[in-house]
Structure formats: C-alpha cells, structure tokens
Image (cartoon, rainbow, N blue to C red; front, side):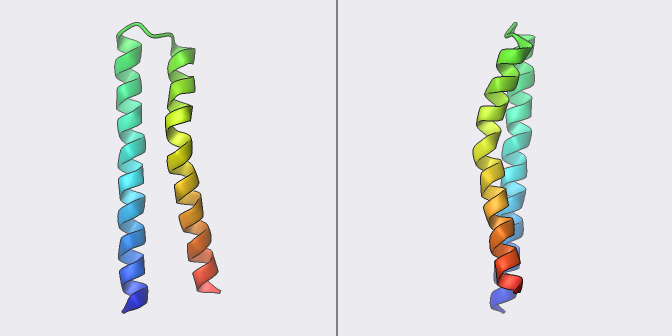
Length: 68
C-alpha cells in the first residue's frame, strides 16, 4: 500500500514539474514575441528550469534508493 501511494505521489510531482517546465516555455515564447533577445530568454529559461530539473533528479535518486 505504501509503495502504491509513493508511486502516485511521485508521478503527481513529476507531472506538476513537467507542467511547470511547459509553462516556462510558453512564457519564454511570449517574451520573444514581445521583443526580448532570444539569448536572454534562453538564459532566463535555464534559470527557471534548473530547480525543477534538480527536484526531478532527487526524486529519481530516492526512487532508485527505495528499490534497493
């Protein structure tokens, strides 16, 4: 039961992080359309995405650790 709950929570967090990264992409597209330099927008996107990607990595590491 506990594994199933952790699996659902993990998948939900992964989905929310995916949505977050998708929304960052949409906001970046809007910034480019508003005349921002593409390089500046790319740097901004990277800065916005790094925390989400680090969180995903830590979830994967915890999942791997729990499987052992």
